[in-house]
Amino acid sequence: MRAIIVGAGIAGLAAALRLRQIGWDTLIVERAPARRGGGYAVTFGGIGYDAAERMGILDALRRRSFVTEELVYHKPDGSRRFALDRDTIVATTGPRSITILRGDLEAILFEQVHDHGEIRFATTVTAIDQDGDAVHATLSDGRVERADLLIGADGLHSATRALVFGPEEDYLLDLDHQVAVYMLDQRPAAIAPGTTGTLSSGGRTMAVISVGDGRNVAFFGYRTDRATPGQDPRTVLPEVYGDIGWVVPEVLAGMDRTDSVYFDSISQVVAKQWSRGRVVLLGDAAWCVTLFAGYGSALAVGGADLLGTALADHPGDIGAALNAWESALRPEVDKKQKLGRRVKGVYAPANPLLLWLSLLPLRLATLGPVRRYMTRRFIKG
Image (cartoon, rainbow, N blue to C red; front, side, top):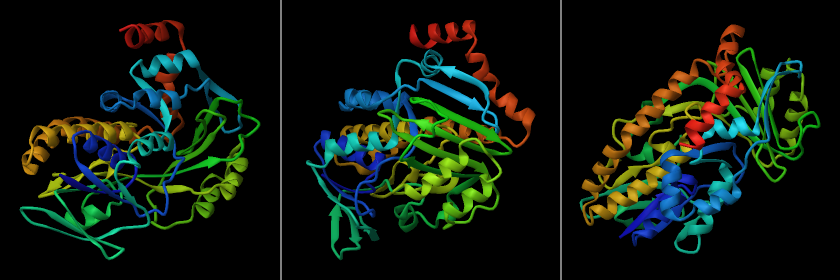
């Protein structure tokens, strides 16, 4: 059996690994000229953690994971609101969960699959045709590839989804926020090594996130109802954050020295069905729960693992496998999407009282009795 996988991100690479484990051949098609790194830090747990353990990559993920020494919430003038220490941070995440940079998770998956299947960079799918026996993908290099299954793992703005399921506007639910992420070449001196510093003010959040090995990521997220595709973050971010002091000017200056900037609206993908015939969507292309839910990477890996299991359990019957897979996974996705929509209301609130209320659970976590309860609940079972 053979699969064409569109997208060499976390979902696509995880799918390639899991399919290889059940005896399939894979071809990965990726529009970027090379594998991308960086991204923001993610908490990787739940079905993703369980899947990584079954797929044999958990030890590698643990070696690349990190624990923040201190998470400091700042006021706009740079002074502290409050802070979470290492023990509190560990207590809030639980034992079967790690924090890892998205790019590091992707790199580990890439190391597992790049010698065992073909990956074509700088290549896109321009047409998809299918019948009862196979799916045919016409590629931008002129070749037509035949497979038993095509997996669209090409992200929020999936070309696979547009070709097979319909235009993007039929599936995207805009959550009225914009996000920018990029790697910093140097840590602001006002933030201690290994520390993550963040502030929220007037509907805007900004953070410098320590992601291990001395690396730091700049993160910006803000409310907007005027997001326009194709905007230049080097123009937009100074306009939005220009009146905030602290380390913001220094971090914005670092944008000119980075290799790439991720800048996009925060949107969910809401699709009533994730497959049509021999084409299936996976990861953000199918369900994008957004960073508000904080579970996208785990769902990508967990979803790939479950897809491989369903295909193995229904040999030769693609339709039955995809139906079983979606029935098993959709309740978890629906739950996380609902969480993302709820969190939208308290993320970077413009109202100072709502900001205080949104931070209250974290403030309580710093109290000894609350932290000891969380430790008993999560760490000791």
